[in-house]
Each structure stands twice: as C-alpha cells, then as structure tokens.
Amino acid sequence: MTVGSILSAISPNVMFLLISRVILGLGIGGDYPLSATLMSEYANTKSRGRLVSIVFSAQALGLVIGPAVALTLLAAGMNHDLAWRIMLGLGALPAMSVIYIRRTLPESPRWIARVKGDAKRAANELASFSLGTAISNGKDSIVKAPLSKYIFTLIGTAGAWFVFDFAYYGNAISTPLIMKEIVPHANILASTAMSLILFSVAAVPGYILALLTVDQIGHKRLQIIGFALMGLMFFIIGAFPFLTQSIAIFLTLYGFSYFFAEFGANTTTFLLAAEVFPVNLRTTGHGYSAGIAKIGAFIGAFIFPIILKSLGLDKTLVLTSVFSVVGILLTMAFITEPSGKSLEEASNESSHIVAAEVKI
Image 1 (cartoon, rainbow, N blue to C red):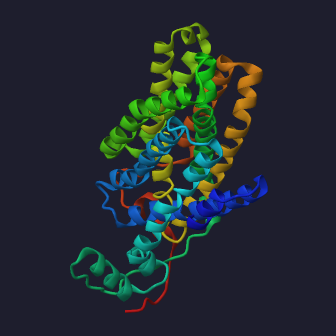
Image 2 (spheres, rainbow, N blue to C red):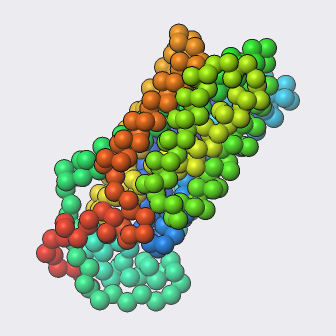
Image 3 (cartoon, rainbow, N blue to C red):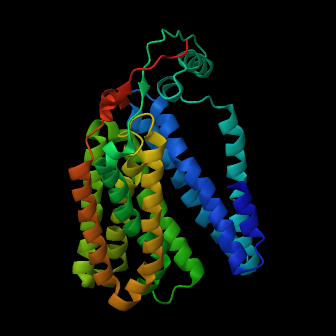
C-alpha cells in the first residue's frame, strides 16, 4: 500500500498510474481479510459484531478526511495536477503505520492451534496479547474444511457484497455527477463540498449506529434491513422524479440511502464474511468475498456514469434498487445468522475436525 501510494503520486503517465493503483490494490486486498479475521478471532461472542464493525467503521474517517483534504487544496487554489498527486501520496502515511502495527500483533491463537496444530504457541501468543497467563491443555483439534463444502456460503457472502458494491460505489463515486444533475450550475468545489456534507451528516451516523446495535439486531438481519431501506430510498427517488425538483427533499432521501448503506450491508458484508467460514478458510472466504465484491465496485463505478447519461437519474436509481432486492435474496438464501454464536458454531467447524496430534 505504501509503495502503491507513493508511485501513484509520482506517476508520469496514465499507464504508470494504473500499474501503481494495481500495486496499491494488491496491498489493500491482502489487508482486508486479515483485518476482519484478526478481530473476529480475538473478539468474544457477545460483542464480536461491534468489535469487527469498529474496524470497518474506520473507513468513515478516511472517507471524510479524503474529500476534506481535496476541498482544502482546491480552495487554496492549488494547481489541480499537483493537488491530486498530494492526495494520492498522502495514502502512504496510514499505510506505513500499518507496517509497524501489524508486526507487533501476534498471530491468531485459533489459527495457530486449529490449523497449524501448535497449541503451546497459541497459548503463548494469547498470553502475550492479553498480558495474562494462558495454559495449553493440548486438546485443540485440527480443522481441514474443504472450500467446496462452503460454495453456497461463498455465493451468499460474495454475491451480496458484489451487488451492494455495484450499487454503492456506482452511486458514491458518481455523487458529484448526481449533484450536477440536481444543481447543474455548481462547480467542482461546490459539488465536492455537498458530497462531503452529505456523507458526514448521513453516512457517518449510520456507521456509528451499526456498530452500537449490530449484536442486538443480528448480523444477518441488519444486512437485510439495510438492503431493504437503502433500496427503498433509491426506488422512491427514481419512481417519483418530481422529488428531485426540491434539493432539500432529494438530499434527504439520498442521504437516507447513504445512512442505510452504512447501517446495513456496507458494514455487515465485511462482518459476515469473517464469521461464517471455518478457521482454515476464514481469510480465504473473506478474501474471495471482498475480491468479488470489488469487481462489482469496479463495474458499478465504470458503467454508472454511462447508465446515468443514457437512462437519466430516475431510471438509474430504480435499477439500483433492484440490486438491493437481489442482495436481500442472496442473504436470506445462503447466509445463516452468526450473531450470538461462537465462530465454531457459526461456521459448523466441528464437522470438519480431523484426527491429528497437536504439538504441546
């Protein structure tokens, strides 16, 4: 991530920039499942949803700081060519901090004990992290679950995440274009400012409410609620285009779509994929889910402006609401509710234990 950010900032041409972003993407893609899995495997059953959601909700901070930096540079009259280089280069700073922090964290005791079979090391790692004493009894069993047994689970996690990212990133990245449809005379500075205000007022509270209530509502249930209400907001705006004639009404409904995206699938897709796979497949299942989802994000970001131009705002948002319905169906059909269950229960891990001698 550090290398990708720095190379992006000094890109001499478009091809170099694309390669730099691919390098950055590889780093982010590697960190995504690790962040979710580490927290889920250290968290307790009662508050696992809240703790994993806190990890993901740090995204909100970046999504506020990014546009804020852009507004500061643009308002200062900085040359646009230099401004975007500074914005991309600043991404190296948090990435460098991750290098240090990750090197100080111990490996997951669950993974060490139940995949590597080293119960003694798992106990020592847990003790070093908790500043206490852990005793190994050597009774951990090895888990060897094949991915083929979790294909339908993967369809649920990856599929729901795919359709969400298609709708969410297509809309989020195109928000300045949407604002231009509503306020055609606004310049880039005004459009960026409105987007930042909209996200700060609507989306950030959604993140906060999600992490505070996800364990009480249920992880799967919150995903369904979020999909339903986000899709409803899109459908209302698209089905009743006269609403866009009022900036206040449009921004309210569009803001609620942001709110229910965060208080719903944007948080829970990250969470569920870290819970419903067994310990030997947890990062793999989450990685596949996130990777497939980002294909949806790419497609959405690429074709949403084209759809917006050809179909208009109303039909585009109605189409987006259909993806929310697909997300609900995939969640209901292929994902079991992990809330209130241990990771072992949520993933049916015990059915894939094999006889093996662990190191003690």
